[in-house]
Length: 594
Figure 1 (cartoon, rainbow, N blue to C red):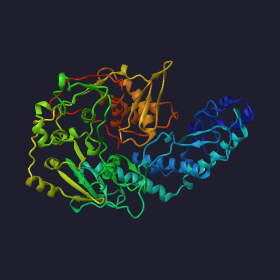
Figure 2: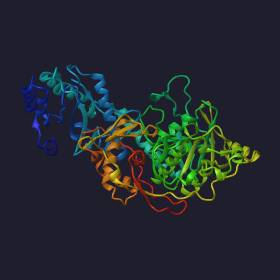
Figure 3: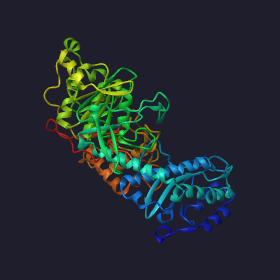
């Protein structure tokens, strides 16, 4: 092994002697084994030892030189391939854990070996990295104990028996299935190419023929199986094709820029299609069914969010003239309504560069989406603060270049502004755009457009670092992800329960740290978009490790838009609004992760 990898390492004999020396002592004596040790094929690093057998497990790393692992160079030749390779190795490591188990038993977490295991999506994770000419696996182990005393022989069996076997099966290329390995890389690379190619074809999303969109259940994200599954098939009029890097071709339904309505009867697959598009910002593993379902990296799911806090957001394009002269150009609320929260969610997304809004009428505020002719007659516009989305969607599209995919089953008035209409019938899409336009021509809507000629301004906001405080108790920084949709941030909790595009608790953990990290750029001058962009510039250069001590946490990749969403939902957030800009102006888009 090269000196750069082994420099400063002790020998494995030294580790054996230390384990022998502390056998039977109090559990805290495990601290004596913290350090780096040179094994025959890898370096084993013990970064942190748990305080007792019942505490969170100890953090360790294994670094295998690439000349030992024999990972093909072409597997690391591009960013897309490297992410896929890292993901495949994590899955191999996790599979080896489940297949092998651990013969080590004892008190508390004794014998436990875990790694940050992925779901259906392929994400860059800190659990597996390529650094310094080596592949490094970061995982956790429960150091064995009997009661609260060190079980040295069991620890020896774990470190010198169990872990080397896992390393050999999971990190050495000769032990991997080369066909599955190559398929994993190819699938990820193809999906990245499709997503990158969307703008060139005037598309914001693509759903491949043969895709399986339904999931096994509401709590099981694996593909549905059985006779009832209907593979996706594009209508001929919407079918597009892409050439793949390996010379193959994929065909499917292209969703064009502009306003797309997804209609159809209940339980015919409208929301299933939208959910697939929500997840199309991610690459998926072979066999998922959504491998080649891709959406613009700037796609954001928008919904009503009753009760959320809103801090100085200009929602006047949608809501104005509130009773008692309440200002909607700098709207604040600790308990926003359905309509004001949905308006804020759209404006916040536009502020940081979203280019595709995904909306389902089932999770929207009805009065935010539509006001029909009869209601307009009864409640005059000068008495109605809300300008519904139907009167702004076309302006957002033409003026800002931001598209919308809207699932709707209750209002044909939207036919008037649609560029495309897709009807789902028994989970099969049909292009009914022309039919919808003919219906709109025969049955003219009697409602009056209420949006005026322009959308209005998108005001930049400057977050203040003093309002973002992760300290809890004795001035100790406490930040932790609580599942996928909650972050404990100091003495506060950030509720991300309706940020539906997050898929992994390791993303949430990383976002919590990124909020704290981002405060270094909150100088009272940088806008939220600029703060997030600067944070991601650092992540792009140094990886997710810039957010915390190397190997100390399990982090997974997330988007700049996700970070902005979390900052906006911190209930202590304070901002300064910049002056309004010209109608239709936008911030420069954030660098979107692909």
